[in-house]
View (tube, rainbow, N blue to C red):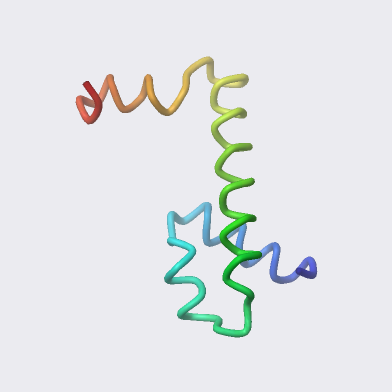
Length: 68
């Protein structure tokens, strides 16, 4: 995936667009590559939240009452 498509995928992740919708919008993208990139970015974002902000997504969801 070249840098342009990485940018497109990163923007999609940042705006909470699902990888399935991104594939529908850009069928020329390889769905397995995009899915893998989404998983990698999601893991990096969770790690960043934990390191920088001192909380995890699980903690956030619990505080919002979405997770018991």
